[in-house]
Length: 368
Image (cartoon, rainbow, N blue to C red; front, side, top):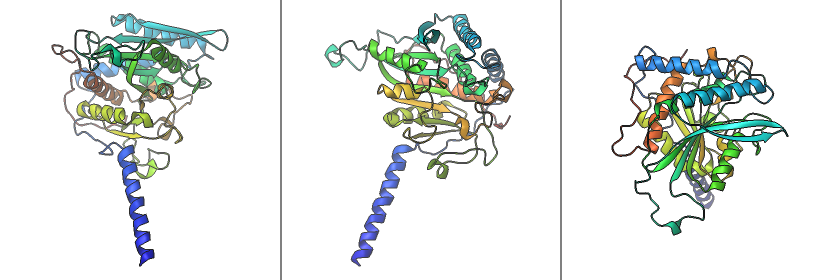
């Protein structure tokens, strides 16, 4: 009897441990599948899709990285010109890699209403040099891997971020700044080194005293399938999530649990696109392979928003990662959801109408 009771206690403790681990790591419900899905035929959706295709063709038709330097600079120039055409004055953070190669991060800032009250009311609650307002960072890297044109990785993230910048023109957050950043050098050989553009950007924010509330990396957002067996996961998530690659994933590192839950919920409250969300350590393959890794190194809550890249996309890092293989209709839906998510996490001033306008509800397939 004593042996049975011991085994029962151990089994219950193990079950409780598994339950608590899942409650910590996963955002419930495990997958949110909104019934409302706009089709490309709606005027606003069609216009969004066409702009996304233009961005992709302009950025990701040929390989663009430090080994294809002219194309990298052309991609950066396109981002700068597009932001300028939107009415922004882009900030450029230039630095040197490999001894003599100049590269640049590009960003814009939506500054908070400084007349609005903040959570911090006394200067003695701030560290020396820290700013009073918090900053939310949304970023995407604009370089491609090796000889790949990088339309999905990461032209799709850049295209979505350009559209977010377009939608947020003139938007003033009430209580925190929003920085929208385009990073260089996410891919090898710079990945997980101080020569990543996102590392340099995060380092600058910390040195300057900016209090960053969280960072989101938009990473490969354009490949989807309605077919079973198209989605794969590393262990143990392959036993938890579905095997149909028709959703976007919010993937947070352990320091970003609350931030990941808040972002996933905000996206689900406004989006027309399926999503999952969860927390996992970087030792699990693929979890920290984007710009959120850099911010995590500086103690900043950071997550990646992704279609899961190599766990789904057969074109990942290949020569055929071209604009024609990016699902721009799905990418348009995701972009709309991201705009709504951002303005939920960092709402505008009281008298300002949020820029996000939900699309007309309709049904449609993700394939294509």
